[in-house]
Length: 87
Length: 379
Image (cartoon, rainbow over all chains, first blue to last red; front, top):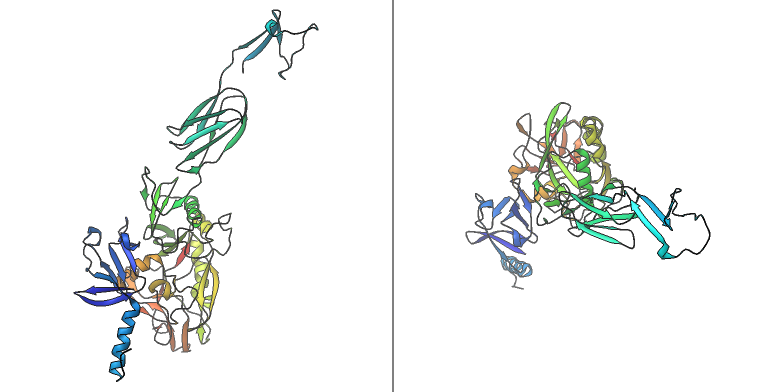
């Protein structure tokens, strides 16, 4: 799973994000993470690099995370809120 | 051809029958030293092979093999003897067609390579971007090459095509005049929909899918709705489905009509479950194909089949489509539901802003509002 952050805060998680790069016709096309200069998230494309082909897009940071651990953390929060114990 | 003369004791014996046999005037033992052979007036047999520059060319008669490299799309050979020779060529690991002929005079032969679509460029080739300027038959040939490469999937964004030396990407555009009005269509993906007929290209292909998927950049017509009053209207009985096939398909240039492929288009048989397929040449996309989302969540047969272009260009603005220069709401292929036909019909729809209304009771009210049509087709 990948976490996408703006100003240090995670704003979207994605298991299989749409890694993108600018195509010759000016539109974005899908590519692999290695060649990506941006990522298309649920509300639009973001820049991953300072590459000219994503100039003008908002920059995000990407971090690969353990999805199960994130779920456990959320479960802990829910349990605490419900008066239970941590898992 | 020249004249072959065999002499014996200085008396010429000419092969007048051209069958290679000679009749001696007297019987007796023929000694090799007494026989003379002359070949006069002969012109060497030349075989000119027309094939792409840089091809490794081979001609062989089974016992003798000649090789060369083509320059200026030609490679010439001098054949040492008449007979059946086979010409073939290879370039960049791809074999050409081959040609076996019996040569008794100088001739030329043309060898060709099949069109191949790849996901990576080949070194030394200068590619032209896009699909403009290609004829319908050329597009069909390229689409078949794309369909024949299983490395090209519905998520592929770029392909490189030999012979035509084209670099083709999702988002590339082509214009068609429909009924006198020019409409622009955009490549939304490759190998997206299964062909209804496995041999739609004349022969089966590796993927069994249509090579190109295109959608109108804007809307081409105002939508109309079914006249009956069922609880749920699904794609097979959308009025618009019939109108696209019967009214709009004939407006395409005849050469293009001939290369538009009938594909297997999935549709939901109810809001939350059930799935089937219809065979169509013109159709509209589903909500999942545009946004990756669906009322029923995952589990449908087309669960990951978002068009490659929409997946990479995921902003709301990228979904805005116009009709007569004004951004309009456009209809999706999901079921239309209503509790009362005349007062409450709700449809999945992309709004003029690019926001997407889901199917179901919270969908777009198409009873009291217009929705337009941006059709798709496959080559």
